[in-house]
Length: 208
Image (cartoon, rainbow, N blue to C red):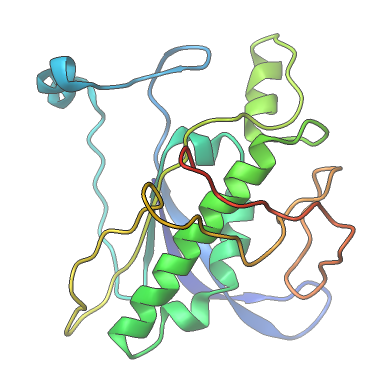
């Protein structure tokens, strides 16, 4: 999970400043060993409370909270997630709670689509390939895995009705944008992406 807090940041090489989601909290994965994350199922659910890490932090109005499965964090670097959030900051901060909720929904869908697309690539650096190298193992590219994302914005005042979105029984979602990394692993800043930066993201499927 991550908590990101919008703050003013200088644009490199200029005197301009822009709003940027800096990371104020990032939890660490719990694993039994290499590529063996903690998991739970019905028969072991009662033991979850004894095994999971408990992390707490004080949030502020405007903070963005991301909770996601390892299918996201194994494929997207932290600063890639910051880029994706930064592109929607204005919408996430919309005074209309319904508009802000729609922006959070769109952000979650885009993160999921990015993670799924990069998971199928084999010619770029990813968090999973870096972790493999640290373990003395050989792996190139992303990791194909289930992907789950929850996005929220800390706000005061009225909130929209609670809703749950999924693509298990309906039409698949299509990403609005291309992946935020090139095949060399370099990030393409917003507004500077080209059609050659990375292949288009395909449709999300049932396991996305």
